[in-house]
Length: 167
Image 1 (tube, rainbow, N blue to C red):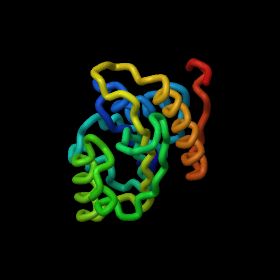
Image 2: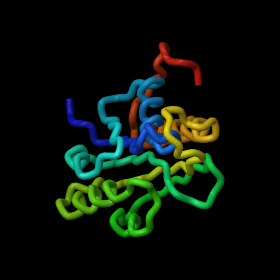
Image 3: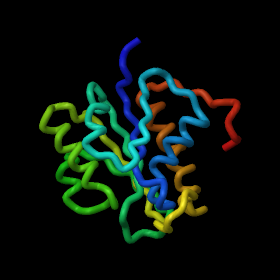
């Protein structure tokens, strides 16, 4: 069996409420679905350069994160990152420095995936706590459906985990 060629990376600090939306999205996807071998899921937390090795031999990278924006809380923004180092010159994430460094290093070492997309969620609350706000929890549900559609478009076989909670 070949190594996974698609990485779904959830980032964020789960101790700060909605800041953990990316990690919670990855957890939800893994809980509800089973994926063919092409996909690897990583809870990146607030790590940065430590994640660089996970990019090796990946063709597609899907990043899910809480982002800074003027839109209402719970807004989901999907962006294709053609030039990740340039994209992160504007601050969009509370912990983007680690992501920016990782993607810049990947570009320098020629290990940057050919296709990179970012799903960003505008947080409602960054107060200390493990739970997502209702608004952002609904956005995580929306992102999970969008990521499923992306993965299917990449040819990934996906089945519903019958033991999981209904959608």
